[in-house]
Image (tube, rainbow, N blue to C red):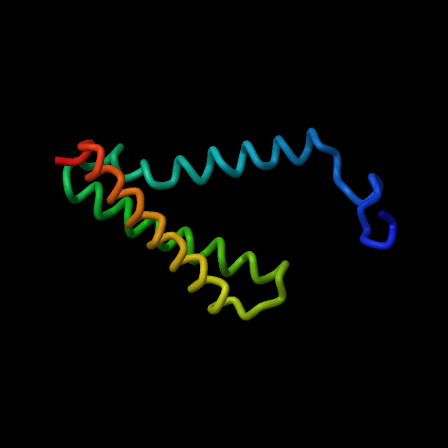
Length: 100
């Protein structure tokens, strides 16, 4: 275990980790609904999509500080993942009749 760096001393406090994950998830879930406070209909949907894509790019760019990759490559990778995620979610909404 110690050869692989898997000792208990190498891991952070589980309460801090879970709180950090919960707060990050809450913030990430709140970002796309912001436009719906100010507008409605297709304009709000498009605004939410654009805000989500920008947020994905920014998170990817910041992630590059940890991964030591270029900020634009990391940002584009995260943006690509976000677009695929949006397409799959939209497709599931169509498949299950949630979107008319």
